[in-house]
Length: 458
Image 1 (cartoon, rainbow, N blue to C red):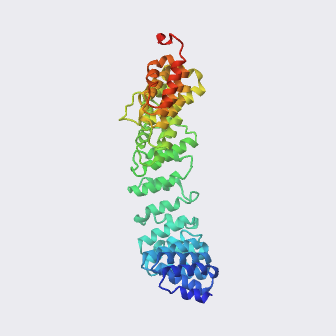
Image 2 (image 1 turned 60 degrees about the vertical axis):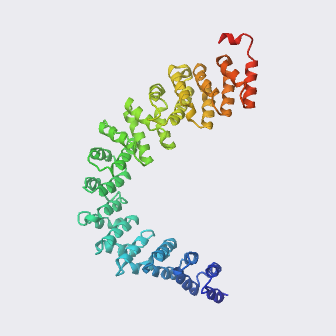
Image 3 (image 1 turned 90 degrees about the vertical axis):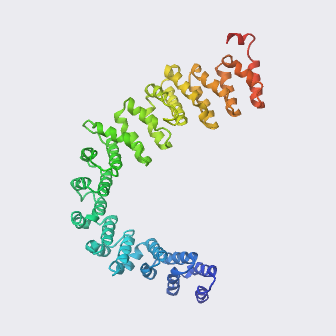
């Protein structure tokens, strides 16, 4: 049977070749099958190549790895990458098969073999072969060797890697990234030195290395560097500052420059940095900071959640500030939702808040921007009206009774009946002639329940 299937691998029909390979999985570690599969890694058909690769990985013995490794010599990038991917998936079985290629005369092959080994669990012999190329004649191979030793946590070679920092200018970022994996072996002073380097890429590497450490003396180092660091590295450092502030009790006073940098980071394209900026600004709360946070509501849900965690207990300060914002300065719909969340939080913790002046201002703001919300959001807002004092909710209900959407009007009618129909008599009478039958009937029923003379009291 194997002979027939192996013969089928030479047919001109790609689907038949693929089918034969699938059946040959039952004989995957037969040497003849492995040799045929390795040959088919260069097949013209992508499906055949993938099936051959999967069969070799399925076996993952020394023979399969050796036959696959040959293809990292290929000048066809598709074949070379497929072989590399297969070797990575083979894991430990691929290590010995790759070692001869680490010392290839071809610099590209050397680099590729090292890159693959960096993704495996390398043996001491493999680490020794990789480390030998820290002095390679090709810069790309040197950088690959540094990166691999870092990725493989080869602490034994820390001093060898550090020695390259002042010797090989192009490898500085790689050196910093690699030794960052060995926090117990590398002094903070080295990273501080890298942070002061003229190259922004080296600074970034140092900033990322520092971000992974929790040394008690780190915060002072970073704070001293904020004004001289490149824009590339600054968000990483600021993120580190915020994490350290949250995890330690910083004894000193924070510099005012830190607030300026955090305010600038609110406009970063990376939302993880924006969230860090929001969290950091809680240490500098004043009216300007609150306005800046309000202006950034509506970016993403995660940013809004971070902002809400700061604003939620400051309703009396924040709600009047929200009223200052027009639609060009902030996302009004998002601010409405934020305002509602703050109201719900405050009324749960302070029942008397429902009748406060601030609540009345909040209701006016929500009413003003009500139609900017989608229908579901408008209904949600009305549902939350139960947390607003009745005199405050009236303005919002009046707006909702004029809403163009029937589901909103139905919900508003229910609230009008509970708050006091006499406050809305003209709108109720108008809705008694609405085109929507449900709206019309509900409004008519509410009007009919009013006592004689009630209209004259309005």
